[in-house]
Image (cartoon, helix red, strand yellow):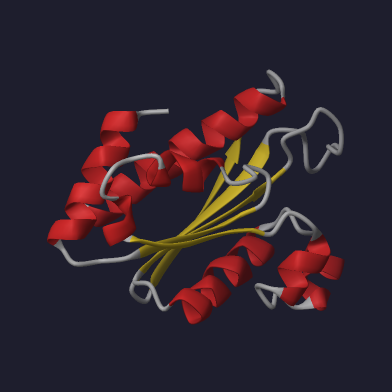
Length: 158
């Protein structure tokens, strides 16, 4: 993880007087940690929700049960719902959602281990990004997803 990029993100958000929030699933709080471990993050960081189970996605983030039933928790649709509803909960201009399959099991032919969706919302603009990280183990996939999310945040706010 690029600690310097995380520091830059915090400084840019401070200068722009913006707040950021995260809704994480497969990364289990790693993205939140990559920001909150840095001095000054309390000025810009609003919340980090780890909605790991389908139940928590439905109960906390209000992801419609139909989306999870029809498309699965690891889908563009679920990621979009997560980021949209995080915005309603946190009222932050910048919101990020992550959902994926970190493995070592749980993958299928259509949804392999390493499949991750990262949603970024900046104001009313939303972009859902799809990645398939190499299956080099759970920790590798989680770190790769966090690193990609940090890059996306940086690009979104600069």
